[in-house]
Image (tube, rainbow, N blue to C red; front, side, top):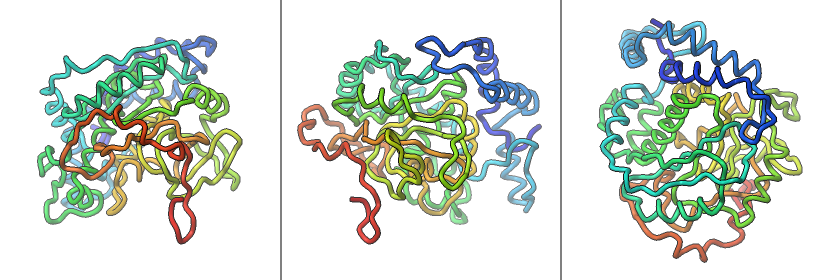
Length: 373
């Protein structure tokens, strides 16, 4: 058994083989904007190998914990290191069971339209807590007007306070790192978990697809189609060399937020490269990077700043690319999946659209001594 093999490697193997059969795409069709690369086929091969070397990811996680307690730190495979935080398969299996009890039959439909996003087989996920019924209906009206050409679905979020304590903090009073932070910030933990569950689901169903993620309490730039088309025409993917000569892959496009906590390292006419960016109101995970990024997030074990937006960008291993304008913004309501909340307020957010100022569509940048302005 491969100790520490990420859950994504195991659960996605059969799906990867199905995608492999489709990988003859020539990049000329509307739903296939790029041809498969050598990296795509390499990832397929990795999944095939790992499927046969990992008998049970949940058992791998338990063995990692046992070995860690006995002081063994050399828990590695030829391909990857062990999980370091509490985003484990045991937690994900609990979440699967928890969300399966949610009745989604009355949730509104998100329609696919004719607007080509220029992404590779995009799949749209909208994270929504069970209680946010009015927000779902309001969002579906705004989203369906966009007419995005993509499979889209609402995805149940989870309140951190609903997760059993032994899954949030297996170490209890001895918790350190991310475990300690999440124990003290249950809302942040629930948000992080919801996004990880989205990645996991995408890896199970379409591992090469680009994954578009929105939170349910957002709206879209009035000129979304024009600005998105302009952005995606020039936005790089694959390896990008920054001004200092550092070449690394683009992990995602960050299209919804309000502030650069750390400013971009490079400014182009139509986009920014790098920086540490707030919020997860809207973003696109590049499909070919999602598998490795999923595991990277499992390894992140900081004692501070463990919100999903705080660890998603600003990483040394990847570039993030951001359009010049904010394309997705939270409405003037509580963003229940991005803040440390314990109560859910469900309102008809469409009634408050008029209070969103035009300045919301401009990024704020970090100024020494003043913060984001």
